[in-house]
Every structure is written in structure tokens, then in C-alpha cells.
Image 1 (cartoon, rainbow, N blue to C red):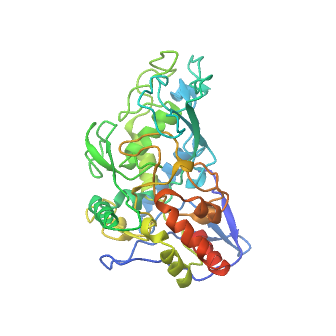
Image 2: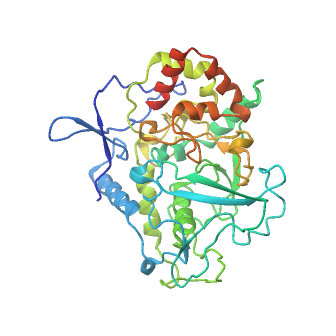
Image 3: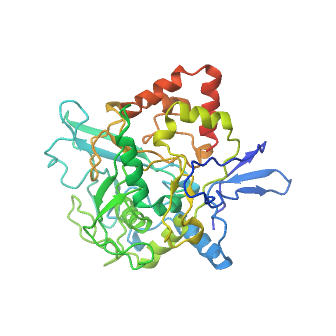
Length: 414
């Protein structure tokens, strides 16, 4: 397995994981990621397994981790069009980036609203410019038009994603209903999406069928409900690798219906190995959270959307993630974030202005913020919040300089 990227921790303040009630059950350990090196210094690794796994499960986790970083080749079925050749290229060490995805949309005169007519993009809204398996024509944004909006998405972290998948649908509906009663304009909504894959053979986690309406939790616009679907979608959409869950090559300008590897490229074991790994990545241990930081986080209304904990399903198949208060710092709901952050894309019930509240997990490993990485600090990201979150940004700016710094330090420690 490739070595993990590690960061030297010079100090180790008391780690406090903040909760917000619920059943009273303690959350599963948020990640043992303090590893002594030969000198006795402490190293911080990002993608480590949750506590409570048996020896065989740790071996399977390491196997999935290695596959996650493995570059695929045309002989494996890469292409005809692709963006990257491995999962790790977009989610290095399970964290954010460095790979990016370029999206395109036909928009109205306001520059952000998706136009009703998207026929100028017959092959979809994702730019794919890497050619293999006989492809000669990249999928690019049309030129010579003033109504094409091209935007960037930085690969989001996959840290702690098992916690997110485990959150009960009823919990999201509860939080959405509570927000509808608010008078400050914060009204998150669940993203109801059509399940786009074939049924996963692993019925322990879900038995959704293609076309079933499900609540999305994963992805920047919450368009995907499960981690096996997330995996199959990434194989197909980012690498041009087909699987039993998504067995069809995506339409392309060269009308290629297959690649160097005839038929379905990867078996279901590839999907299961990656999903096994992602379901068991820990939330990195939070070091340096303070009571005052938590109070300011709530005072500025950050905690309304970045909900400190959500309760998970009692029947989630991974016992240590079942029936707990998962400390993900997100409501997993869609919110209008204003036209400056709009991307012209629609996913399920998410429109151009809507983004899922980003889970604040592994923030100390993050160097660029917001969906496109435009913010290079937590402070810049907070100030850029608009739409429903404008009041929170204003509340942050109304704090004293010292309190602003304490709030920023709190987020940076998550």
C-alpha cells in the first residue's frame, strides 16, 4: 500500500469532540491518527480506519485503500473519455483534491440560472478531455457562445463518509422541518434523487433499484445516496470504467460504445472493495476544539447548517457506526448559497444556487475551501457565504477580532 501523507504535529492540545444531544450514545471514536515516528514525534495521518475493526477488516480496509490509489490503464477499461485514472487523484489520502472536475452549463441571461434548453450539451455537463481506446474528440465546452458557464469542483474528502451514509433519513427530514420554522431564511431541504445504478449485490446496506427516489447525502449537491453508488458513479463518470452497477459507457462525440477491455470493465468486487474502505475511514481526531469556539460557532448560526451531530440508523450494518450521534458538522441539506457560488448545474432537486452543507471533517488537512477551492482560508470561506447563509457571514463579521479568530481556530480543528 502506498505510504500515507503525514503532517508533523508540534503540539497536542486536549481533544474534545463536541456533540449536540440525541440518544446520549457516544459517537464512535473519531479516529486514532496519532502515530509516533522513530524520533518519538507525533505524525498525523488523514485516512485511517475507524476503531473497533477486527484484524481481517483492517486488512480489507488496507486493500481498499491501495485500490483507491491505484491508477487504471486503458487495458483495464480506462476511457474512451476520462478525467483522472485513479480515485486518489481526486481524493489524495482520502482528503480534498488535488484533482478537479470541470462542469459546463447553458445558462440564462443572468449568468447563473440553468436554461431550459441544454441541447447544446448532448453528451452531458462534465468536461472530459483525456482520450483513450481510440477516442479522438474530447468533450469540451462549446466555443463562440456567451451563454456557457464553466465551473470547477475540487474533489471533496471521503473522510468519515461511512458516518454520513449511516445517518438516518428520518433525521434529515427532522432537521429540514425544524429549519422550515425558522424566521432567518435558513430553510434547508433534502435532495430527492432517482437512484441511477443497478441494485447493489450487497443488500446489507441498501436494496435500491434504478429509478427509486432516494434521499441524497453524498456529493457536493447531495445527488447520491450510498457509497457503492458513489463508487460506481466515479468509476463510470471520472474514469470511463464500467461496472455491473453502471455497465454502459457514457455517450461521447466519437460514438464509441466500448473500450480496449471489451464488455463490463470491472467486476462488482472492485466496487465493494472501494466502498468497504470508504465506509470505514475514520473522522480524523479533532485536536484543539474549545468551549468558547463552540459557543461562537453556535452564536454566529454556523451550527444551524453545520449541525454538530446527526443520529445514525440503528440497523446500519457497521455496528460501531449504528445508533450513534455522528459528529459530521453538517445537516446534509441543500441551501441557496447565492449567485456568486452558483454553477448552472441541476442535480435532482438541487438547482444552480443550491449546495449541500459541506461536512466539516478533516478541516486541518484542507488548504482550499468552498466547492471550487476559491477560498484559501476558513475566514475567506465564511465571508463568502451568501444566500441563506448571508446572516451567518454577517454575524461572524460583527464579532470582535479575537472572537473571529477563536471561531476560525475552532473550524480549523474540526
